[in-house]
Amino acid sequence: MSPLPSITVIIDESVIRHPIGSTDIMREQLGHLLEVARHPQVTIQLVPYAARPHCGLAGGFIIAERNGAAYAAFAEAQPFGRTFDDRRLIAELIHRYDAIRADAVPFKQSLQLIEEAVIQVGR
Image (cartoon, rainbow, N blue to C red; front, side):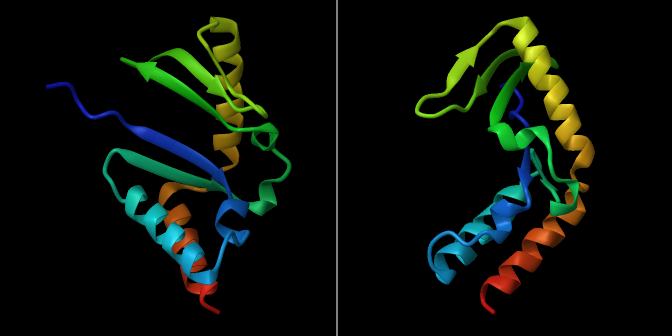
């Protein structure tokens, strides 16, 4: 049996602060985000407003790794995203990821910010 994959997600603070849908929907979404973040294979970190601007605002991306080595990536674009395995492009995304993560708050602090957002949604 192969080990479960680990997932690290870095999101901008606006994701938890900008209301999408009704108060109930927003509370439910944030609650689900907390539930997912508590899974042992998941790490979620927030990039706070104070860190603006950062290169992650240009669009989301995913880097897939196997045995510690990046082998593919997906970059968002409108109307379609793009999947690629070009080592040079993947290296550029890894560099961007590292820059974004350097501005992110630690995992536990990120969870606290999400919990605070859940409370604030109802106000």
